[in-house]
Image 1 (cartoon, rainbow, N blue to C red):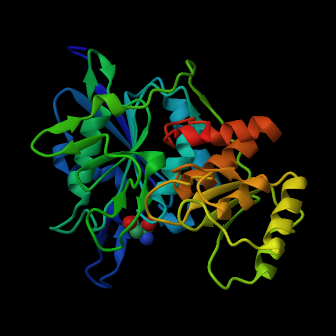
Image 2 (image 1 turned 90 degrees about the vertical axis):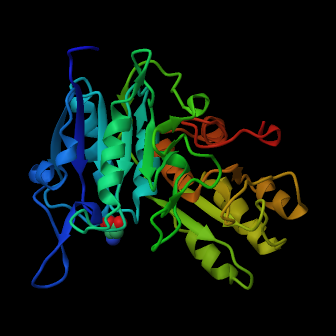
Length: 348
Ligand code: ASP
């Protein structure tokens, strides 16, 4: 709207992006985030107002957990009407988990929630943090026909905009550290930011709301050749276990092993919700394709399709927190709730 500033809330949680190198120790120290405009004066642009907030103290993203996802979702809920968009600055290590969790916690979004971070501190000349922050803020205010272009949780990193629950940290070195293995970028930033308008997700649920109960009694178990069944038994027999993500071979395969079948079958009987994701970097689980996948399906393990592990784990945590059980839970895991999975005919 002409004459009305766009308003963006930038929340710094911690991580490299908000730090500078301490001249004495050589280590990274967080900047005073209320002074972010001094470090990135280009943030000041006519027609927009930026407010900065920070976790106190800022935390390395290895320390981020459900309590921080709940904090972020409550800040967004409390200030939803006040701002046109939200930018969350986050360490890259667990950024994909936070983006995935928030996507399932926030319902009926009509505003952009953009996470970004950087590989190099904002205080260094070669930093990628400056571009990531400036582009994220620009995307947070982008609209088309008077409507925000982005109405979901996304990640901007290394010139690409990705759906948040499709992301994965792939590199500890590259400036393109974050990837979206199973979904092309929603936008690419070159001279202009080119949006792929047909790919955007808009939640069919009308009213904005937050699901902020998360079940932490979930486990993630990758399979590997030669794995002792004792380990799998130890995990699945934990009486408190509510959910399990199994990282399987190829398109969702597991060894044809009677003990594995028995152990998973018992967990299924006890109501443990089990989700099958591929340990391949790219592609999908196809439960019908090989006999070695039938075993899992027959034990009640639900196909996670082409969900990332980050999406499967956080979807499980939020879905269990919502109290879904049995068929309702199975349907939720198989459903594309927030654009986190691609539907294949075999999943129907
Ligand atoms: N260890 C840092 C973190 O994830 C790395 C980064 O900021 O990207 O918080």
